[in-house]
Amino acid sequence: MWSYILRRLLLMVPTLFGVTIVSFVIMQLAPGDPELAQLGAGGLAGQSTQTREAYLIQKRDLRLDLPLVFNFRYFRDYAEPIAIAAHFLGRTHEEIVAELPDLARRAEDPDAARVLAFLRKQKIADLQERLKKPALHDRLARAIFIAVRNYCEDLGKHGVPAAMAMLRSDRAGRKEKIGAIRCLNHMVVDPFVYTYSRDPSEAETPQVLNTWRTWWQRNEDKVPQLDQDQRKTLDERFEALVALPSRSQQFEELEYFDRSQMRYFAERLFDEDSTLDERVVASWALRLHVGKPLQLDVPHNASPELVRQTAENWFAYYEPRQDEFQPGFFKKAWYTITDTQYAHMLVRLATFNFGRSAVRTREPVSRKIWDAVIVSAPLMVLAELVIYLVAVPLGILCAVHRGQWIDRSISLGLFLLYSIPAYVAGMLFLLFLAYGDYLRWFPMMGLHSEGADQMGLVAYFLDYLHHAFLPVVCLSLFALAGIAMYSRTSMLDVMGQDFIRTARAKGVSERQVIYKHGMRNALIPILTLFSNFLPAMLGGSVLVEVIFNIPGMGRLSWESIEQKDFPTLMALIYIDAIVVMFSILLTDLLYVLVDPRISFQGRGKTA
Image 1: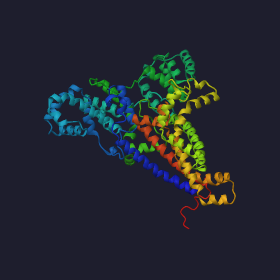
Image 2: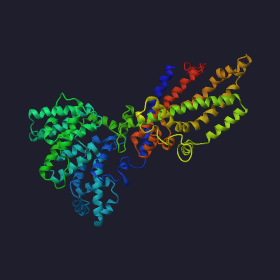
Image 3: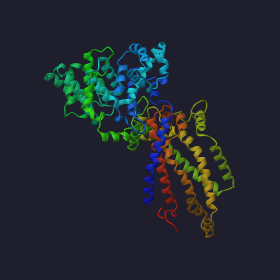
Image 4: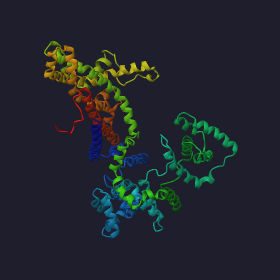
């Protein structure tokens, strides 16, 4: 048996691999951009800086800026495309409009031809026709800006070395350097990390420390000194602040500090003996009262000094990370197949690190799924218990009394139940048993009453059963009728076998014939249906959960499809595939427990 289990487990690997490929291809072929869809009407990204930044963060997180399967960008030189992009991004809308007539006249010139070739690759609609008509240059300039910006966003980190080279070049003018800075802002989102995330970890500490050390090295002399009395008072306040039970309370208390006290928080942040909680609070204080001191963008009319200071901030970010942006040959070759959309998705699935949701809330996918599972699983377990504890005995009862009034009345009732869809039953239950002018025996929606968290254990459980009764009944009715009729058919087939007649001829009591010989063999076909138990338990029911306002797996699946939340969808498909395969394996093992004649020892052997 163990060798059979091992073979089945090994077969799961290529099966899951195939599932991920099919799911990935379907999602790539789906119309619409899952990120642009989150930005509102028309999918117009960039309506505000904050919205655009959130869009880019999500895009980087989902690796949508990478090639699908193979990534050859590490081997390409992007100096010329970035120079052209910087040229357009470093100029105002009016300046671009003024350049378009000259660009149209010099179409055959080598420099102009390179610019036009770059713009054609950006797939700007009707580029040639609009370029020839001055009346259309205003809208064309806007289209060029958007196309160049999107090019930088899609290119991501691969264009950073070329942009940094422009900033270092003495031959690049002020406008070109402004354009290079703006290219970097589109290629790299939030290069400096000022604070920790909602769930702080030590892995975030190096980035936070590097950011504030860069600021501290340039501004230490400008920050007011603190005397011993001030330090003692701040020590007491800081310890009390760290001891507060919630992050929100800590953040509220930080507002009572001021910028003159930031030397203390900087020193606590850099202190090697500081705990993670202390560093989190210190970084929040600096972020609140100092802001984002490392300027990364400049206006079109920026002075040479401002351009120089901003370029230095980018150098401070880039220099410690040059190996990341310019890896060696072997790393480049490795990244060709590993630094792609599919590869990153495969790693996330294999390690069960599903990342964050693509919706605005940016919740971790694992947490979303777990919150839905703990809602759906109890309901589905209760429903399955009702189904099997009621359906199997009813089916056996009908088979034993075949053709009698018991069989006919139960079969009629089962056929009626089978004809009622779950969502119809749910609406009828709500109408007649939950609200309106009829019986108000059950609550309309949800699984708990208001204030249920304050109840005792027994009261809480009874309240849950009261709310869950109607959803469980709706989930049970359709399957109950089907399994009951299936049990009846299976039992009738077994009762006509020779070994049943032999048992009766030997004088075995009818009870033993039915329960010991008949029912045990009749369960084998029924166990085949049991393979749907685990997937159903995790899958939930979309319609029932929507009708009763239950935030379970069914509703989560529907919302993920509706919102094009691809990370959550991929995780759901992956988990469902694993559960289905394990449920089939569990069913095979149950065959052996029910019927000792079934064995895996002789598989593959011939007589």
